[in-house]
Image 1 (cartoon, rainbow, N blue to C red):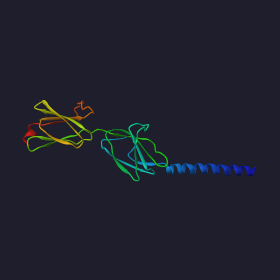
Image 2 (image 1 turned 90 degrees about the vertical axis):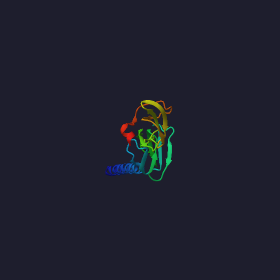
Image 3 (image 1 turned 90 degrees about the horizontal axis):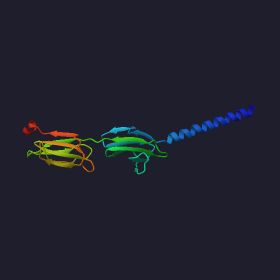
Image 4 (image 1 turned 45 degrees about the vertical axis):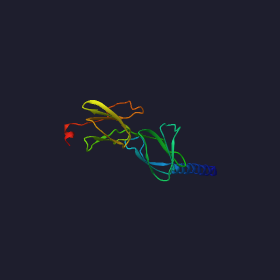
Length: 185
């Protein structure tokens, strides 16, 4: 009987030890994600992906990863993304968990006074802008500005909204009214 107890104890130690070694190896090969944090919401379109034990980033706009962008990397990487909701994971020996990242639209319309009493309008946001131009309270024109694009225009009021694909949406997200104080400068 004593020999049988020793054999069972030895079997138990071997099985438990083997399971601990396998769990340690799986944990060692699991990719470690440092950045960005899960469920990050930002308006910054440049996102740092920082991780260890992986060499492939998969980014998609759906959680099933039916059409992912695959990026092979050796080190960390900054990726520029358009506004939207993204699902992403990294893969090494095994894949990481799926994480979510949201890039919010930022509407930012800047005005610069030109030399000839006109204004330069600048899209300083991260999405296309649809800008309505008013002269003395009446709509006098419209321009669509790409990110970082600028145009010289004449008017007294400028209303910018995020440009839809058809540029029909006119939400008043950013308005610049040129008053009498600005006209003196």
